[in-house]
Image (cartoon, rainbow, N blue to C red):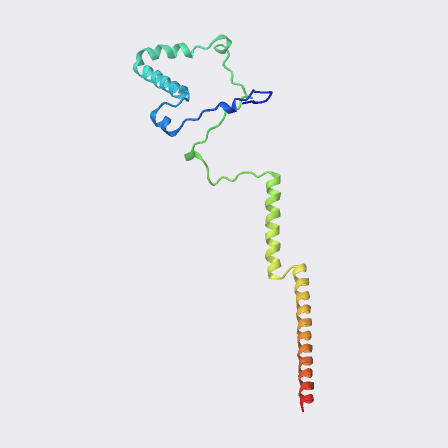
Length: 163
């Protein structure tokens, strides 16, 4: 089968493990992670068995190489990452908001306040809308009354024509 000019990607040759292979333990995946984990567990067990020799090795590791043993000054620019435990977290502490976040909150609150006043009919726009609605209702009522009068006049003419 022709694959074209460039063959750099081996996508056509991938082989996936089937569920049967996984259950049988015959999949072709590398087991490096489990091997490393097993070595780590073995190292821990060796350290636990050799407690007496561990004291001597601690003294050797405490000696620092070169000028590190001579100069014992902490770097003031070095920021150590602070890990906060769940029990030490202050729930009542308020966090400082950035300027953008603060402006966004103020904008949302102002909009909510405006909409509340709009529903109550206290804003200029709401007053204009209510006046417009009252005018429209009045015009519709007049138009309905006029239609009723015209309808009554038509019925009266038909009644006179029948007589």
